[in-house]
Image 1 (tube, rainbow, N blue to C red):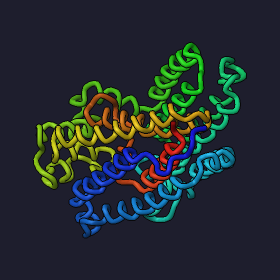
Image 2 (spheres, rainbow, N blue to C red):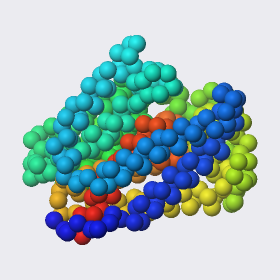
Image 3 (cartoon, one colour):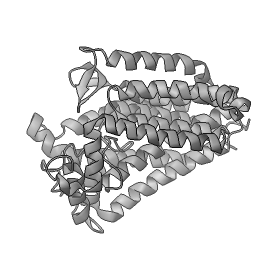
Image 4 (tube, one colour):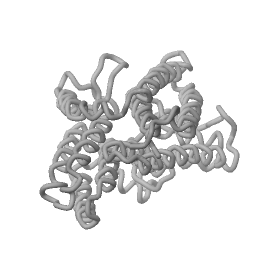
Length: 365
């Protein structure tokens, strides 16, 4: 193992704080109108976002200074705890329904989303499991099937909420870890085909998912229903042009685009800051992903390498899906933009995970 650095990757820190700063500004800009209308306080959402950002930065500082190898012993207990929370959230009267999904545990407006915790717990468990059994991955039944069974079990519980977006992010990041561990391309290709068949089945089993697919193909078939969000998102992005309408000058946030501070916050950013502003944010994400993958490649310890790849995978897959939905390249799935969208559980957990990644960067060659 390489000698520990005196400091973590400064470029990763800069990219993280830069994205977080953009997110706080955009949460205020996108939510001020709705917050004043609903709560009489235009700072309602941004004050809560600042609170969770402060908590997340504190957790990032803590995990950045905790040797990543200590997380190995907590991988299995953490996974079991998250399975328990996913079961608990499905109990009527215990789980809180928001946005049509029973995904929350909490009281009133404060709550946690167990599926967010599961994403990190699954990556930790897979990193440990595969690091200890890397040589067995050439065998499908002995090496690949056990972790896949656990992964599909977690995905099934998340789908019972239902929350296809979060489940897709977890699956994508987990497959990146499995690939990094040395799984055969043929096995992964077969799994991809089975995944496509399963996705078709999930879509066919729920009419609202089929409506989202048809709305994705032609949102104008139902402009006031299934296609509404996609159309309003494009109405926001189009007028932004090269430099945007100006910070705070969005028109779509005036009750045209639903929940502009969460899933479609990039639409508001593109409307106000234009192509240049959107591109600069994507450059920051690319910088963060590049430095994270560089860390994963440069660590000699398999557990650390797989853990870094998984954390980067969570960010990369989530950014890819969110931006794809916003610009009309993917069906609406309900995925937030990491570090930018409003949301306590997601923001705090992601900053905690980035702290682990920053600690890993200290061990990179």
